Image 1 (cartoon, rainbow, N blue to C red):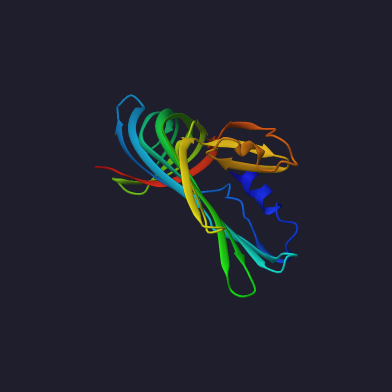
Image 2 (cartoon, rainbow, N blue to C red):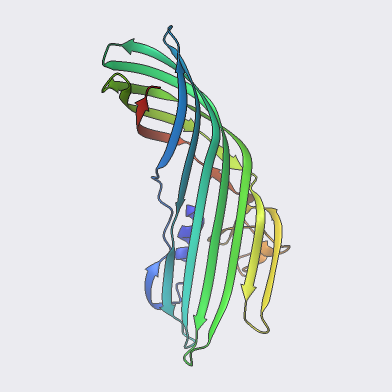
Length: 249
């Protein structure tokens, strides 16, 4: 997604007096997680967890063209990740009355949705506005992620503890399936769409994400066919710092 957005920001060098820009999605994001944990007397604990995270933005680029009209490009990307079920195993490596150090590992079932609104408005001197828009949305409902790490637990009271964890996650989601819709009022106006697999491809120095129609890889005839073409994927592997409260029932 960010490779696509960065190349889109550079796709309109002919705009004069340009303002704004197409922004990337933030690499740092937050999410929430709730977990039911059962502890045993032999240092082990087992948990059932669920989590949710969402990220996106709206950015725009505006400028004047050499043909006497203004052009505005608005991009609205969004990602949403839900883990309806995660399984965790914890092992306490050091424990005192008010302090505990533990390691943990587990797996989760992840569901992801990606979408983007790409709107191009051409504004002419007499006030006429012509648009050429694209909206795609795709999802993947069955991806497995692996997590592991270590954590600290500080007991505040008998039933309340503060926890902090350093967690590593391996999760790459691909094979998104969805729909794309094109809308324009050029000529007599037209709206059409398609369903299929979400693709990532390049044409020259431009990178795009789309559900391609036949021949879409030749958007820019001067640049030639796609140099890169594969299923789009969302790589959520990385390291997270997690902070929370543990409430005894």
